[in-house]
Image 1 (tube, rainbow, N blue to C red):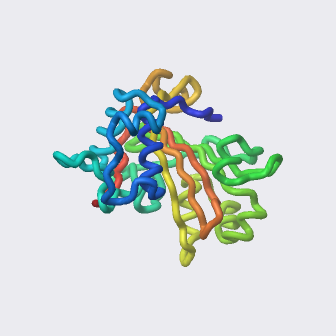
Image 2 (image 1 turned 135 degrees about the vertical axis):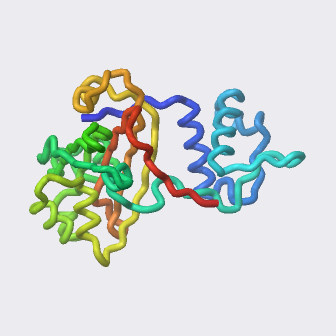
Image 3 (image 1 turned 30 degrees about the vertical axis):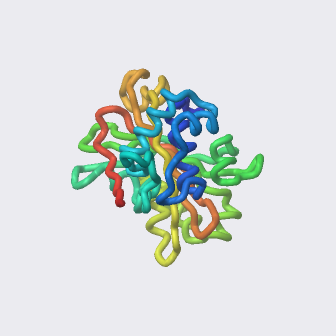
Amino acid sequence: MVSAERRRPVVVLYERIADAIHAGVYPPGSTLPSEPRLAAELGVSRPALREALLLLQEDGLLTVRRGVGRTVNDRPPRRGFEHLRPLEELLGAGAPVSVRALLRTVEEPTDFTTQHLLAPARAELRFWESLVATEGTASALSQEWAAPDPVLREAHRRFAEALDTDPGRTSMLAVLAGASRGVTLTGHSAVTATLVGARRGEQLGRPADTPAVLVTQVVRAGDVPVLAAKHMLPTGAPALPFLQSN
């Protein structure tokens, strides 16, 4: 299983400020406090704060105005993927892509699934581990969990039934997308930098110290989380496209 990933302090700080912006603590058009004041409020050093603010500016959440300071953009870009699409579609982009099932099983909740699927202790969760290959080369390792069957059958019965009949050549998200005609799905994703590690490196055919991007994803049917996933993309994988707007 994948343990919690270690993130750089500046990334954590970036997310704290971004979350505050999206939550309205710093509303659109407002000016952030001065660096000394903001650093004191957040309990961080000014160099770390300055680096996080620069990243927020590069990502379109903040604008620097001479004589005014840093202001929150009127329409900051939404976080995560703009459209829910299976990873194999995003990575394929016209190239041959395949999904190979490494594991299809049932397991008890982990900290990750307890947090994101609200799964009670000793619940049984379907777990899929898959290797996504583009043009014959391993490009991503996906781990996906579905909510407990009683929750699925209440919130999205067609998804629960489709999981029973899948032949193992697609991702769980692809099954969910195919079973969701007429069902409103929403998702949230987060992206962090990490290393593949020994076990995942063996599965991906890469050294353990290979840099990688880890994408965590939660998908809801209505207000109910029905799928949670972790996608590991090592250096050399095809670019993962994002749609952003301002």
